[in-house]
Picture 1 (spheres, one colour):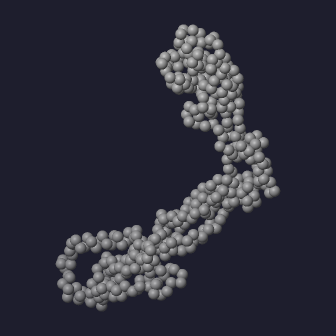
Picture 2 (picture 1 turned 180 degrees about the horizontal axis):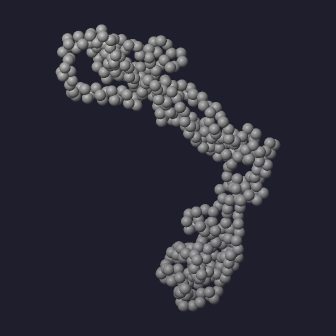
Picture 3 (picture 1 turned 45 degrees about the horizontal axis):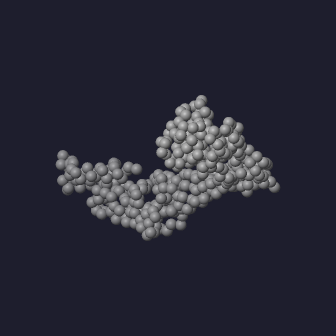
Length: 407
């Protein structure tokens, strides 16, 4: 490197003391042997320190500026030693002649990158437990009107033997003999600069600060064990497949007997033999005779409430009025007999019960019945080629049938 101290630090001859100090810190970090792989790093670092020792001392700087040898100009303000990283908590007691010193490499990294090598103290053995997700299958009636469903969950619970402490009966965790409860240890390495100290997690206690000398035989020191637990979940009316019920604090117990996570119960609804759910509506398909469709009738419809324990006759059956001349595929609605609306403030707010009617054509007629039907056809002029026709209304009929039987 150059013998010009100004060039070594990369400053002009009229640089202020503060500019010289900043330039030195930057240069020292670049050429420090612990930072760079340059084989000449040690020599460069010494020269940077020598340049700063001279230019930071007004007496030596004046000698150098006059062309003299500042290192033999007598003791100056900085000749006996200085703090080249003043205020940064890094090097101390360093001189260009290589005197005794000691520093923490974590402090140097902190000065360079804003990091800190200091310990934050021991870790806690107590950890928050994980959340869990379970599936609960319900009938359509249970989902529609709500229920309280018991089920069993396989999860972690607090160890009943050690109560979450992790130690055998009558024992307690003891202070780690290696780190003395701090959770970290300091390692010292010798270098040409002196002792370099670095802090690491204690390998004996894994940073907890304590050691479980006699672990609980039941949980092996974890403070929790795997077990099955019976839970009852209250299912609100109106839930459907995919809805989740949140049970706070009902999930896994954490390590060290820590607080349990949450439990999420995902609903799955079994298909029903008669009813199909469409939002808040219930849909059903009912077949009626041709004569009933032509003349009109009243038919009883068994409701979904009939599957509930304790339902009354009025709840279990509704009577549906079918007007005369009803066509196959016609949908009639019974207001307020569908599914209760989920999270509705009005507990009585429900969807409708939709009934799609299919008119059944008789397939077997005796002689008398056939004569009656033929007489009716003659009277209505529904014989020969005039009986067949296709229009938009028929296309709507087939669409209604498709929707009624789908799902």
